[in-house]
Length: 369
Image (cartoon, rainbow, N blue to C red):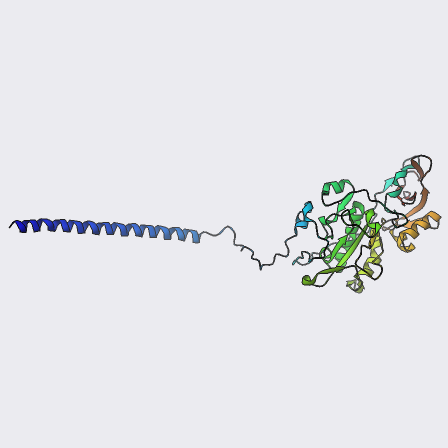
């Protein structure tokens, strides 16, 4: 009897324990379901929200050729010097944008003669200007230090333009005098307009560089610049001075790059020298800036030395400038009495003066019409 009571007492306890376990299982299942629903709900919210940008991240195989090189994007950085080797430059996959030709004009800085009709020149200026002769007989020493540490502002203050700001250069510290650089840019813009050639990508430029010893002293004047044409495709880029076989069509007429430069560079103040000798890979100073007033005369004379001699001898007394204006030209030796030289110029006349690096001055003036 007692055993039956004990057995009946244990039965309810087993039932209660089973109910409790079942309840816990149900609660656990409910919690798991709630978590799953919450997770799915959050995932749906994220996929339904548009991304801020749908532009894919460029992979190594994507075209990034339009990205500028370090020297182009940050020309003020001295550490981004372009190496002397003719390695493959950064090219662009964009089509060549049309540029407008620049009309020839007076590129020199023109002054006005005072009312007394006399201009006083400093004798130290006989080695300054656009017409300074620079050769083995008349050496020219460049005073501007240059160097890769020179900032753009320092170069500008010294009257120079750092060509790496726009052009592909052999050496990063490559300079032209600002006046010559503006004229060169006008020449190249016009070439790009008539040839439809990306002149920034097609050439590399050499000019005065303090860290590269020029083999042609005209580069030291800051008025001479050489163009190297890119030879071969992107995978075999090399550069050379001979662009006599490259053709351009202008007004339906085919001519070589060299022929076009010969015919047009004087309009922008340059005398075209061109590469000489059998070795084209040298600093030749292909384009020597002499100013838009004298460039046609220097070209006709066959060189700056010949032009200066003719002006000094009095056989050349006038010059026709790029804009068609006619200027009186004369020579004045530097005075040996004192540090200055007085030059007679008609009152109110426009004039430009350059030393010749031979102890004298070349004066060009034009009276008001």
